[in-house]
Image (cartoon, rainbow, N blue to C red; front, side, top):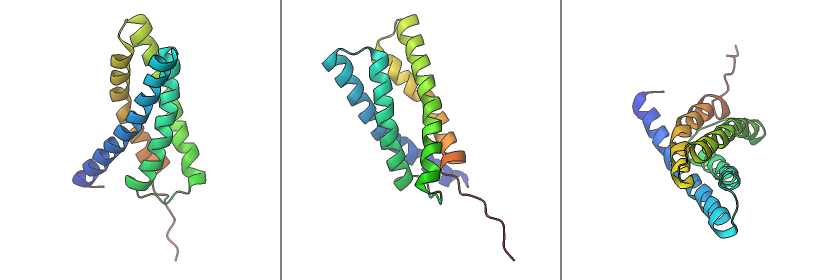
Length: 135
């Protein structure tokens, strides 16, 4: 992959991520501000919704993948599950230990995890399968 094409794909991934983040934050705010849920619960539920949005849009708009949904979806959610673990850990650290407002904590967490999600999905989830050359 050449650098300009790779950068364009990363930018599309970031744009798709922005849409998923809007879904994530909307649910986060609805749960915390609307229903009085704890920030960790809201962040976790929002993360799951954002992951579903991101898979759907990444599959369609970012990666030219030859992997079936049966193969790609579990990989996507494995990458997302690691990200979810980091989200929970970072939110607990930023909110409960450092005393940051939960929205600031979520912004920092989202920025930190962008690269993890891109690399994990580019090199594992949606990477083209190598096929041996046939004579």
